[in-house]
Length: 323
Image 1 (spheres, rainbow, N blue to C red):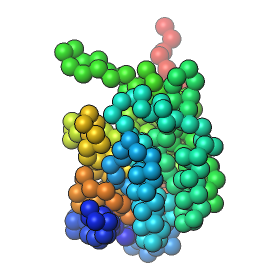
Image 2: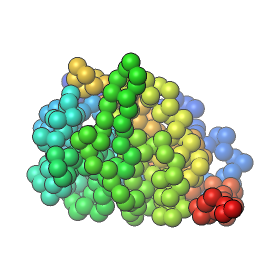
Image 3: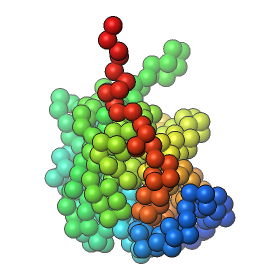
């Protein structure tokens, strides 16, 4: 299992840093679940993925330049797929700014990213693209692009964050975003993907559906958590989703100050189906990638030795009993 991360200095130089030893040796406490035969097969069933941590701004060209550098690094590291965070292409100080740049998926912004995938022969997870919607609204859309530059799947964020704290802040994502209606899963070189975005993380039902009704092996959670909610809940929720679905979870994160009014928690994570963090940058606010190998045999091993799929109750079991 490879675990490494790459990050950038202000002058653009790349510095490789290993993860903490507790993460590099992430399977040292997993012997009860993995047999030696399982471990021997790991290399034959592994595929490399990169997860991005970045600080998007309200400049499409600047963000594309950053993404291009990260794609190049991921391809050089042997990754078959690179996963970007929510609002990877644009993040402005006001919701109206996102409406101004929203466009169709066949528009010039998305096509530039499709060309990037084609140039480096790598799959892209583009989480949280501002897709033009209806009636002065956009869709927060997660786009999967294959290594030939074709859009393979899309998912529009279902759960929108609306909050009105008495005496505190008010935010209504639904005021400028229309919710999605459909769950999405798609096959890829790193396994069968389940697509989600940010606030979806707080609703385990969608993750249960992706695992048990859509056969997901790897669940993607591109996000832009706030510092307050990130500090309290980010890693806990992600590890819980990985454990309860027995899937890899790849959570690419926005990090740091985007402008005077927006700041994100960061801490991009790759988590295995046992709930172990196997990919993480050494600095949760830096720009860079963390790279890990997705071990498909580990997914099978965990699911066989903790057989929740066979023992769980079907969804309709929980319907209210008739009187």
